[in-house]
Amino acid sequence: DFMKRFLINGTNMIPGESSITFETIVKERIFENINKTNFSTKKNIEHDFNLLEKQLGRIPLLNDFFQRDMIEPSVILKFRKDYDEILKMLRPKLFLGELSKIEKNYLTFLSSIFTPSKRVHEMIILKTLLSNKDVSIEDIEVILKRDYFLVEQRENIENAMKHLSKDIFTSLSTIKDFEPIVELEKKYSLKKSFKSSYDKNSYFKMLIDDLIDYNLNYVLKNYKQQDKETILRYKEYTKQQAFWNLNLDFNNGYQVSGYTIFEEQKKVIIFITLDDSLPFVAYDNVFYDQQRFTWFSKSNRCISRNGILTGEGRIANNYYTIEVFLKKKSGENFFYLGEVEKILNAQETLGKKGEPLVEYELKLKYEIDSNLFSYFNL
Picture (spheres, rainbow, N blue to C red):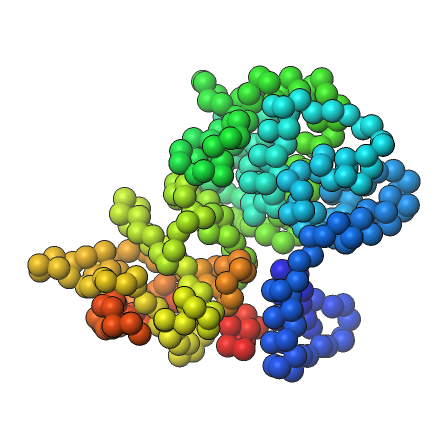
């Protein structure tokens, strides 16, 4: 992701008066190679681990890699599901500590589902609970306002609490084996087994503190929110993170294709892939400018049926708030482009296989960042 951002906007990412430009064909080739390359290899991780260990004079932690601009901790955690496994792989003869089955469960839950964080809320809740018996939403509001200049965050905090307590994960198969970390009685508190392990097992405490430090630092460097913000335009999100950061309780986000309509919130989340390979080649998405582009509904959809507007028809009539996420290639994360200002045009048409669908012309509230727009149009 960093290399892609550098290619898109390199001049603004290097100090001084230097500038850097890439020819279009060079950009295309480099992006293609980035998408094909697996950076999460034992060789890459071990190289930076050994180097950092010599520099520090001790075993490096995830936050050390991040602070010293070494291999990204999220890349390390793609190779193994938590850092305990990385340490045992690279230093099998060195005994740092042991984790019980439930401690391993907690660590893996935080490592695989909450890392790297795209907002501070979950980590602030966890950090606060580790030093307090219980907390209220109001307590977290005070901390976010005092330390992070975030206001009107109640909905975000409630959503974050739901993730840590697993109240939002009722059917997501990848989550079912994990134990909740937070529980709600009169106030929110840590599960007793989590707090007990944190207090008694120094190895578990080290790994949890490291995850919290890394995630908070990652957000502050890459996803720092201000004021009332919940999600940042032109930043990258997975489908699941898109729902989380918009505070939408859709727990099957990994399987979402195309778009999802939330009737209660009067909101639609759209995911667009510009890939020119199957199955995406079936849709000819066209950018007219940095605000206007085409988008297509799912197959076998129409604007009205028996004189009544369908969901697609209500989209055409600007009934919903529409949030747009777009990526160039399959396998990448989505860039958040913001809200749609208006559906300018909608018409029933036929897809390339003759299937009925609806073609829309969308106008965003804000122009797409020029560098990102150039990348989309490579």
